[in-house]
Image 1 (tube, rainbow, N blue to C red):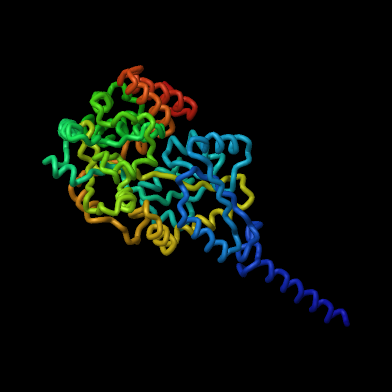
Image 2: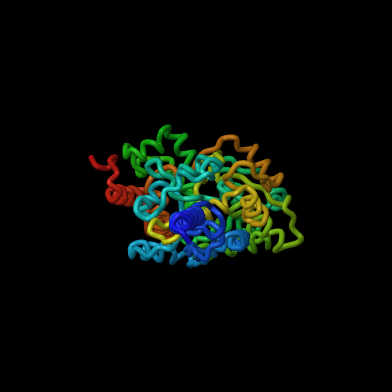
Length: 439
């Protein structure tokens, strides 16, 4: 081969090599990872109850398309955050980790500036509910993806037949709830199923009516975040806790509320032993399956009227996915989040998850029942519950639960609960170096 031919051959080989290494075809490299069929396993750490079967089915579809496998590592709820924090502190986080959204939550519990990847440039951020996006955002950067039924608020699910037999109407005030519960109890039915054993559920009696507190004391949410007011200063929250104590003392929760768990809610409503439960609206479908003699139209919904609340309270946050910043497969992890957020996959997740009636993305077909639509119409005023607006509340949820349990057991006063919330908020604000607490 002469020199000219040899030079041309080398040149063509070099061009072929560059072309083969560029591009985006299957098996090609991009940012150190393949973008076609890839031999990658992503570890995903999550709490029990956050991952539904439909998402796991989508993960199989994702693996078929990309070769990327999702290894779900599900931890019991009461152990999850300790396990996660241990892994993050040891710099051994999974590729994707689950967590609750909320500004103080993602800052204090997960230290997202250090432990999570900025997802602000992802396409799905343009289609998600802005309120959900806000709860996953810190200092202008999006750190998590929330795919959840954020409109499926926990409300009072009630047995219409029991109400009709006793001549009761939907209570709009605390006093009406109290009087209705007295009649129900006198009839031999326990008024309200409340699973205190779970440690978190009973906190909603204080937190969900948050928009009502903000209405009674205009600017309360903003003032709490600016450290201009304290929980202990607010008469409406003190009133709410006092009312909750009265409900318990009157026996409206039954004799076993401290040992009752959320898992028992379905059967308790299905048996007719209880008339009401503060629950996700989707539970009615489970109740009907548990007792075929019941129908979905046998149940209705109303908002929790503690402190005379008439707001339909919304929780725009929920279990969310974070990409671990020190993971080995950042692009693959973002690719999985993008896959889950595609409209057809969101609709599949919605259609095949009985707990969901809608998701927090645009363009989806919801599964609202007529009873839910009636409830939405009955409560035109809407607001965000307190833990998703006021800083340093969600992060101490379980501690608040312990305090409320102590109050119900007569070892703590309502005012002391609010003082404890303020104390813990101040401690967390100090750790976060919040300027509102620096003076």
